[in-house]
Length: 336
Ligand code: SAM
Ligand code: SF4
Image 1 (cartoon, rainbow, N blue to C red):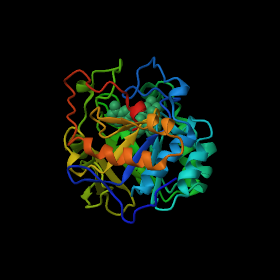
Image 2: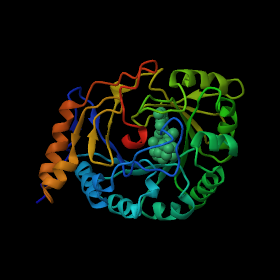
Image 3: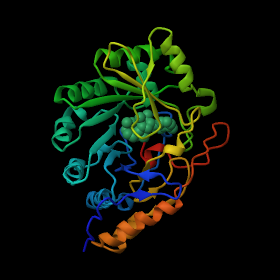
Image 4: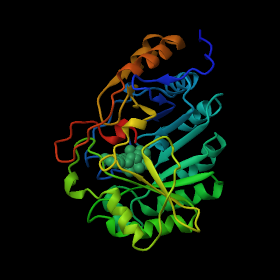
């Protein structure tokens, strides 16, 4: 039995922040092995530990009934999970949902973009760190640039309302491509966000402190040849946005190191094994898999567990690139 949606119910934490956004990771697996995200040899979770698509849809529904109106499906690579479109269809039709969005590496979009759009996805984020096939391969280890570009083209063809590129810049790796990537976005009337690398999980490839390339530096680089006009636009999240005059393109910066954004945090994350993480940079969590598996069909119990979790949402993260990673889970587990 489900209790009624209490009109106007909201999830509010003990610091007065309203949580209206959940990011759901549907798998820790991926067809790529990006150097900042994964180790070359990764051990993935046994399938039995993953939430089923039905469990994911139930938890998504519980959040929406609690006032969450934005859901992002992510991973790992969400589009390699078998039958994942069913999850988009189930969540996409829930009353109260304002936005269903996805973050993807783009490799499966040639075959799935249309189905995503039909399921109600309006905006899509595609990760792209290089326009050079060799460099792209070095960063993603197993990815092919041409598949991602074909995926992006398909996303443009099916006509999502907005497409945004997500780019992680690493010093001496792809910092020479910043302008080319922005121009690439301008030419296609799409947006681009630059994300500072975060110390999540142990990666063998590079020293994160040495590879750090700040958002401020990226902005300086862009402003050598383009004008960036700050906007007050906000997604209620960590991105700061700028417009480039006479273009449709917005340039975003996600800067966990150089600009702390925790005081406005409006989100929580569900890992693919059902852990509700209250902060990307801390370990505070609640095991929602135990709640859904232990009490099948009991929506009240699930919703109460989510309400209760608000009391342990921490004030903020304290990322430190110099220290050994204190957060041992990789971004692919957390859901980026
Ligand atoms: N596979 C999908 C993709 O790559 O878009 C979705 C999951 S991925 C973990 C989500 C985003 O997290 C990507 O844009 C990726 O670049 C970013 N990311 C992964 N590891 C990161 C890290 N250590 N620091 C900052 N961003 C990271
Ligand atoms: Fe896969 Fe995305 Fe992580 Fe790259 S960033 S390894 S595409 S999950």
